[in-house]
Image (cartoon, rainbow, N blue to C red; front, side, top):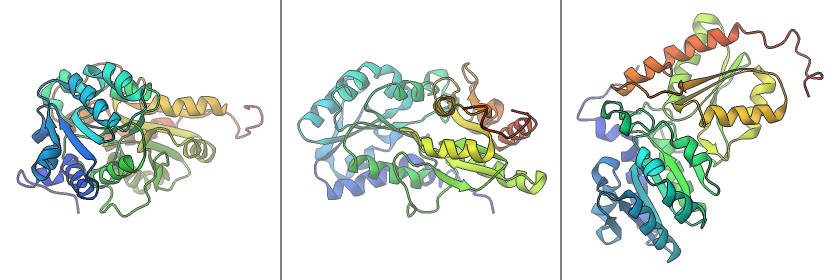
Length: 334
């Protein structure tokens, strides 16, 4: 049975709602945790922490760059700040502060970047975060996680607290489809999760693309008899090189799916690993094709740019028709 929801249920289904609750749970156990917002406490759900711990919650106003600097100072003083704003503001408007104040000093700041990709599609191009993975990937010391759903976000927040150093956790606005019914599964930073076994082709996805890839894989098995491996690459940096290499060796056909520009994000991270392996592989990157995304509802944008299940199905069929080599002999490729 498909997931259904109403306007009343939508807040509870928001990925940010899950992270807000997880942060409150951590706050009860760890008094050194503080939270910061740039006047978006309600929208990003970090305001939940403020309601429970008002003395440890700081609203700096509409001044995202200042928020990053304040958080850096708090971290230097021994606190563990979680700061949250929309992804496009966290990665672009505050890039200098993220780079110099947080990453350069390699301090314990945890950035929760919400409304990522085109998930706030109706807000227009200023609020589409289609460059943030590329920006965050390029910053030394920064761990970059893109959870598949709310429960994985809970695990990412907990792991971020337990792991010293700067983090960038990229989540959507809400209405995420459920991949994990609970947080009780093996989650490890830098270790991808194979959600569907397959030997014909591999789809490596992150964020909202994971559920769509699973849906496509199930359809293709029933309709085309294809065994599609689906990998949830929740950690973009450090990327799971072993998972990529195994997928190349086992299936020799790879598709990446991301709600982001195909330049600089998950697809390029996977491509870099494959290039270093020196092995031939049929490869296709799904995402925003180096242009600004259209304005509209998230599900409509995903369909238009081809990262919904229908777009993935079409891409799989296309790549399955490609001959990457006349034989399967690796000896002439290394």
